[in-house]
Image 1 (cartoon, one colour):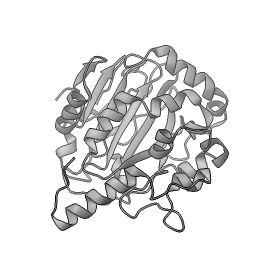
Image 2 (cartoon, helix red, strand yellow):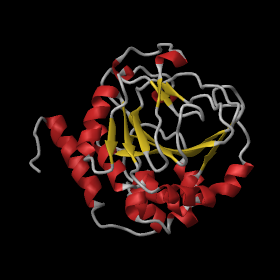
Image 3 (cartoon, rainbow, N blue to C red):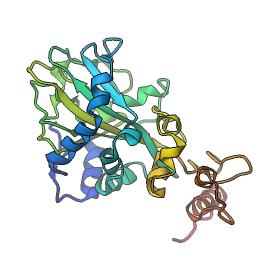
Length: 293
């Protein structure tokens, strides 16, 4: 099976349907290469200061730089990109809410061998989620051209439907080759891994992932982004970062306050509409009483 490919004129529904079937999809040139280059320049001091990985899985020739919302205003645009949110919202629509799971630039230097083929959802303590129940929808943006020689992410299309804890070789995979400005989507159940970098330049990928909000985030956004910076951000981005209830009773503060009210030191009488609506829908579903839209 090949990786489904779309251009920037595609609809989020089309990409979500491809993800349900193949577990991965590429949207080519969704943004200009210059926008991703701007983000890389903002992050350059942090990229240079990031040490190589401590083990073979992290990559002895790979730097993984996180905390991108605090460190790069341009990266905030990619985190909340409307097309991406359209796709993620459809893939994870079975949950009450979803949230940002991690932000990371993965810089693979020349000489790095291929990464172990794995599923990202194994981060949740290898819990065996039911087949077909997706808990993650992930993206890797090509900050420079992705090709097989420089370590383009390697995927096993269709492996989202296979059994858990399987082992694959690089020969079982195909490279997610794409020009800078493109993005590869993949689910948490897809088997994949970084490719070997046999070129003479660093491959830069902007890895932004999302997960259902009742699971713990891989990157702790409340410590990665200081309250001082968080208070300067818009509410939609803050909710995406986790300043929202993950379900009816998950994530409130002290006397059942909304987390955004706690952050801003404000009070919203009766709570916030989005949380109330979600809570009512959930209670109705428990009662077997569907609520009209």
